[in-house]
Structure formats: C-alpha cells, structure tokens
Length: 331
Image (cartoon, rainbow, N blue to C red; front, side):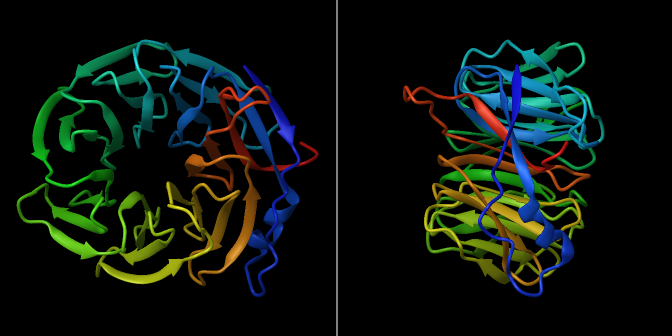
C-alpha cells in the first residue's frame, strides 16, 4: 500500500455566482493510493465516510481507512477470494463495515471489512452492477446477460429475478425504497414501482444508451449519464428532466452527488472530471485526469471525491491506482 499527494488543482472554479465551497475547490489537491496490481473499476465510501473500498480487475477488493482531514497514515486490508474482475462494489447503507462486491466470476460476496471474511452467493452470470436498498435489507445485482437478481441480505436468498430484453446498465433504488431505476442501452430509464418489473414507467431520457445513475442524498433528484456525452438531472417525485450537464464530449461512464446535494461530479474519456453546481448547472471545477474514468464517488460526509480510471504507467501497464480529490495542500 502506498499513498502520495499530487498537485492536481484543476482548471475550473471560476464560474461567476457560484457558492463559496465551489470557489474553494480550486485550492484543493488529489492524493494517489497504490495497492492494486491492475486497474481499479470501482470506488465507494462507507456510510461514515471513514473507509473507502476499491475493486479491481486484479480479482481483489481493498478497504482503506482514510482520515477525511488527511492527517493520519492510511491503512488498508486486501479482500481476496474472487477469481475474476471485481467490477462494482457498494457498502451497506447502515453498517460501516459491510461491503458487497460483484465480480465476473458469477458470484457476489458480502465482506466484513474488519476481518476480511465473507459470505459468497453464486449467481448465473458475470456480474457488473450492484446496489443496496437504502434500508440495507436487499441487494440488486445485474450481469452481462441482462439478468437482474434481488437478494434478501438477511437470508441470502433470491427474492426476485428479472430478465431484460434490452441492455441493462447501472441500477438504483430511491431513498424510500419503493422505486427502482434501471438505465438501459436504449436511451431510456425504466422506473419500477415495488419491484413490479412487468409494469415499468419508461422515461425517454437520451438519444443514446444510458450507462450510469446516481441518487441525490436529499432525495430530490437523480442523475443519469449517457453515451450521448450528457448528464440529465431528474426530479424524483415528478420524474421530469430539469436540466442537462454538457461539459463532456465522450460517453459518460460515472456520476455522483456530494453529501449536501450541491455538487455533481461526472466523468468519461475526457481528460478531466467535471464538477457542476446542481441548481445552476454551471461547471464550478474540473479535475485533470490522464485516462478514461471508471468510477467517481463523493464521500457521504465531506467534500472528498474518490475517482479511478484506466491509468497506465510509463511501460503501458495498468497502474492500479485510485485518487481522492479534496485535500488541502498542507495536510
């Protein structure tokens, strides 16, 4: 394990009329975290914002204990057991030491981040998407064959299965847990009430496939990133599109709201991550990056943004690195 500070102060931050926090982002830097042998596909914070999990194509996940103020030494634990790429992971919304991993080895694992022990659930296909229900009782898993499985976390039993006849990408529940959102390769979003998959509401969102989704922590909005390079912002209650974020030129791979719901970060193959003000739609900061991004996620308590992509070293090998933006330079 290794971490180091990097002077990545970004290129934005100067939009007129933005709030003070947005203006201050330009004074913050990123730190790099090394530990994986190959590129990192997914990063996620626990509910307290004190631990970050990273999943890699090196078949492992790692859990990093991180002081949000950047003072103490970083500690990490390796979670070994998967036999193929760990493509996405997520934390139990109510338990700061339980993390779920979805892997191409057709299994998902529920890990105790303190001991490194896990429970394994075998499924039918190569898993690529995973999300918790906000009350922590269920997990939804999507695979490359466009099968969706809903699991009861307490019994580890399947409670619902759904086979989609379209490309199914990232998935999410709303905070109340009665609406389930599926981004699709057809450019629309399927909204399913109470897991009644035969009666979906279809939102025509984009002119190309929808790849990723994020929920506003205040339960006002959700955001969808698309292959048309746009991010659309939707009102959760009315299911209406309010605005779009337009700074990128490549398909949007990942999107995240910060803990106050003030900022949204989104990224693609463009050489920067854009951070925009949710209410105005204006870009307030851009974090330069050297490679296409796979995952961005804001800390649930602080303005710290974890991000990971296809970074290569000078020998063109995977760097196995992720970064966290938001530290002051003197810490």
